[in-house]
Length: 170
Image (tube, rainbow, N blue to C red; front, side, top):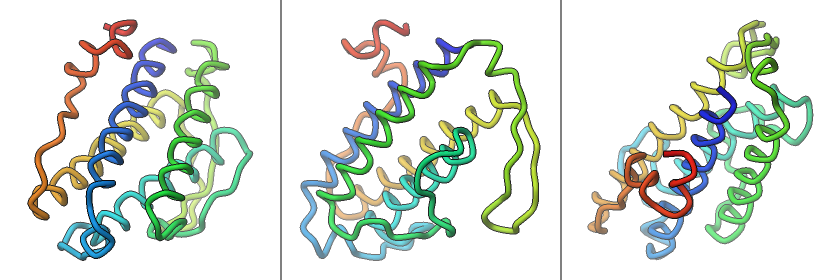
């Protein structure tokens, strides 16, 4: 099971890098343009993904800074946002690398951000949510790029598994 989540963490890092490369081609106006996505713009969407990963990692580890809202803007400019994203992706990979399969079957308890209730659940399903959530919003980021007239970005998991980074997990 640990290897399965390590694959998703590596995929997550790879896909985030590709989205950030594409976002780097946008000018400031396009990066901030509200195109009607759930978090409005590319800037809002990428901030949401970083914010929620920090929230989940604080829940999982008890460490790190975590915003108190799902729409927190942690960085308005792409360079700072990208540096923070890259650091968070490394943090996720390192933390997962420290876990055993047995630890993944354990439970943890946390307080939700949106409605302030206590939830207790197993770690593995929560991790599945985290990686699915990333994929969901990266799909929105992909749509934002196409709405802004930019080319598509290849983000398929199977494509990742055929890359040098992904072959170890295929």
